[in-house]
Length: 270
Ligand SMILES: Nc1ncnc2c1ncn2[C@@H]1O[C@H](COP(=O)(O)OP(=O)(O)OP(=O)(O)O)[C@@H](O)[C@H]1O
Figure: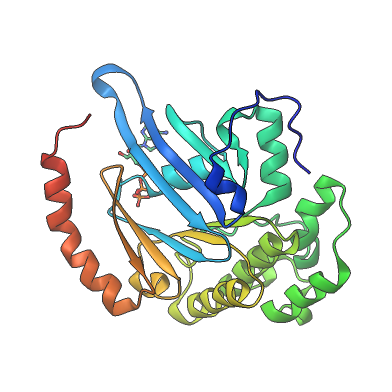
């Protein structure tokens, strides 16, 4: 449950009250450094991510993908603009509230799996709930274990699992608490194409059958082809979107991206 007592009440944009928007960035700007050395990592980014969709964030290296993900997930502060998770404004929350929100309402999947080496697969899967003092929903946990194909591996430690199996543990960990949204940062970056494909199929299935909302940063057009829609960043700005992407249409759009990047770079910043 969200504690609203510690933050200043701010009007929530009315369109968020229909509950179809899972995550929203509204005019978000993020700078790193000061003065001449300042880097504008995000430049007035406005985006709505729909509940129950699988979204890919793509763009060239340094375009702001990770920064956007971190700002949307309450892992980083913004310099201007507002970020919402459902009807709750992250940019009005203090550190304690953000920690609680990330723990209770957001799942994370990282390229490097980030499993605890001394814990078994099952202990890793239920760790966020254990930390939060919550009991896993036994039926849902069983479904997650079944669909990730980990039943025979639950007692194994991460070092006893393949990369693909470790990432499936990380996926199961992210899904087990039924978060409002899962943020995945290059989840298949350390996997061979077969294991990567299995993880992506699983993520897509959790969106299609389970109604999960997933936001994934990726460089890979194949990975983006598993999603419902792709947003493209260049130089900290949102420059394009693609619905129902396939590997081919993503590749085609990426070819066009260089031209667009050149055009964006010519535009003066506000
Ligand atoms: N902590 C930081 N301090 C200073 N500059 C930063 C910091 N984090 C990111 N940046 C800069 O902000 C810009 C956007 O970085 P970001 O990591 O979001 O890009 P990205 O698209 O995720 O890149 P990549 O695909 O290479 O991971 C880059 O110019 C980067 O150098």
